[in-house]
Image (tube, rainbow, N blue to C red; front, side, top):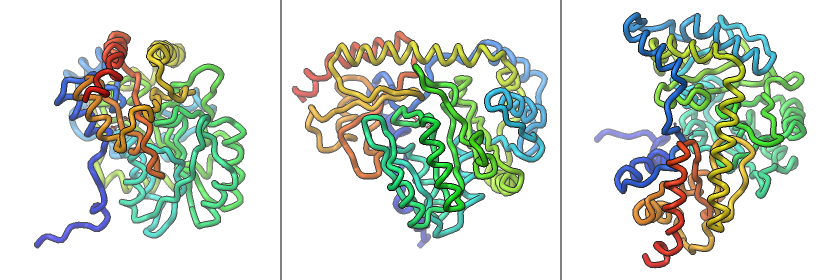
Length: 388
Ligand code: GLN
């Protein structure tokens, strides 16, 4: 008999990605797994077309092609005012997913404890378990998903050596304020800990919210392992391009994990995305505005239909309250929603460590017409679900 690993015994497949398969099965408008149904900027597509003919087609340098790392370091400098050495402080990975896995495997030991805010993006749980470590969940309290300083500090008293900080946050849409981030920084110093950030929605913030990079806070550069992705910023989720930025000592380890895990991100795509990394700064304001428009359209639709939700301050997700439908199982609700109403969502229980089951998550990274089609289908929700 083949003995299987204890670590993976408790895993399910990713419910986020499973919902995409369920949507495809029922022909539902897919507002579950967060990815756009519109194209990346034309310049990027054209550059990809050229690269198909000119190459590169063989391996890039394992930690990322030098020209891509240089362009990335310049972009990071423009975003954060931080000087990043592309030679020693950056690794280009296969998406933000691999960036997080490398960060976790490079820094954690079996039996280490890691604080994770809940609700949280489901991969973090799996990342930490694969590293042999244990999560300590710290609640983000609705409606504004803030944390209680004492509860966060307790996680460190209980032995957490790091915090995973997703800002702007998936699924809550929370954008951490400067004050909150400074509180985290204080605790991190007090307990000699560090922070693994996931900032993939860095350019998608709304209203007065501002994205503050954790590494830019006083003394935090040395204590931050920033994971990021180019997927959301350039609408290229299928390209699988992400990166880790950290002090060189950490990056030295991240490089080694990445080398053995994937060897490297796709060379032609690294070359083509230089055309995105060097776009004028106005691009980032345009993408922010694009999503602001989509948020307005979708939330107005939810308002018109009388749904209760938490207004996102960033990212492109919205948690909607489904208490009125009296389902015990939110996965069953989402399956019925895809099957009967033809709209895909992710059950909230995928994100809440405490088993909360009365929310579902929609994303609105879709063409306006797709969002309108989803809203039209949702207008039949109460009738179809009550008749089921
Ligand atoms: N971040 C996206 C979501 O939460 C999906 C990411 C993925 O599937 N790799 O839906």
